[in-house]
Length: 148
Image (cartoon, rainbow, N blue to C red; front, side):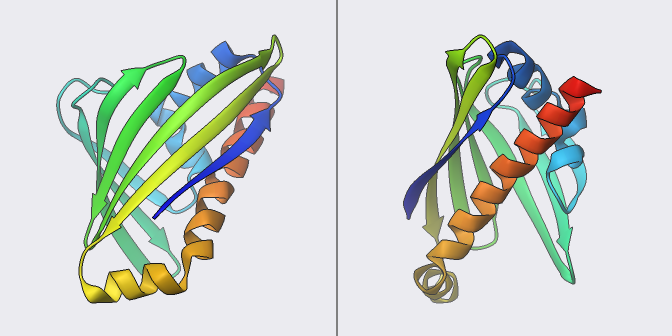
């Protein structure tokens, strides 16, 4: 499954990148993130791997994030592995003007096992909705942080 999402953030691109690229900010905009643990590689750089643990309601999800390509301020390509799901997220940050940035994410999902494949086929809108929610949450966090 492939799709993209985008949102405009009313901040200069440099400020967006500064907030996005700080792992201490993740829990401020990623709802349900309980921990972010560095596993190996240089933190924040290509090849770095980290374990992320989420809790949403009674559901607990653990995944490993790997930074595949780091070309900030333009682009960050990451992968996320969890049981039955592999996801690549290509995050791009386009300069609109000196005070606005377009944040675009392109998603690629691969599902293992018939259960995950059936769920993905029946619920593609849920994946897209969650991705858009992360963009909206980051926008709200970043714009509020810049005003503080």
